[in-house]
Image (cartoon, rainbow, N blue to C red; front, side):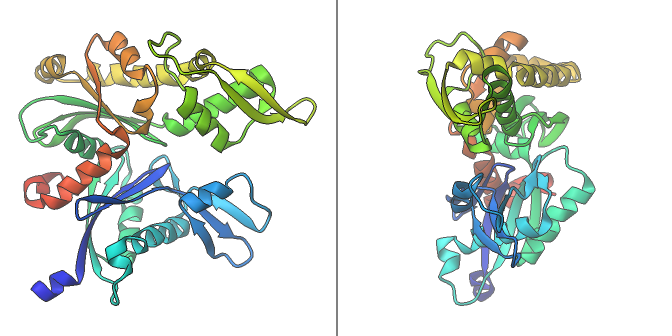
Length: 341
């Protein structure tokens, strides 16, 4: 038995639209953008992760960059398989092995996923030498990663704002009681910023620039206690075609993102309205927990708190809350067996 254990490695994967994270032996060993660069002529994968991201928007006709995951699910099967394979190969203790080990995996999936999409994730993992593959819903993993005891007869409300989807779930007794999954998240925020600059300033910017704007001066409200400094943004002038630079404040970005944040607020209110009264009483006492990269948007916690009249807490290291929870579920399979699919 011991010998076969040597040939098996355990990994937890958070397969995200924007970032893929992998935990091995309790440590985050891969934290990389979910992007691949493909050679059009040979069809081979040229680069993955950070190196492929550097090429985005700067490639010539023989190379194209692909985000294989869309809205948290696999959109390009072959590219996602190659990407996961490369990420697993880059794990130090697996990379140096003479014999490729079998893998025991727990993979994170959105709660609104269909059976067909579930099967696609499962098949991908099996091709990756996955000996034992289990799936876990994102809000569940986020709750475990935040440090909530999900097995208690107590209601907790989790909002996980990723790159492709926002997952809102009320969790109690190791199960999801009410959940709502909407396709408004980090990528939509980037598109909102690009659209605003195009219509208000005649400035055309790429995806990487809009992501950078969101990180540096993105805000959910126009009244922040510690506002970020204004930012200079470079792009192409739509009227003259010349490169140009403009000066933008966080207030303008808050205006650009307002419509999308209203949709998240509406989904949250709808989830609260469907919550059983006993669990609603628990949520009144425990508040709302935010996880995922999108929850780092300045002022979002305050805005949601104003909307719901409930305290809102942002997870410590929200980007890694989901993968941490997935890693804990992998380690304590006996305890969390009922929530693993």
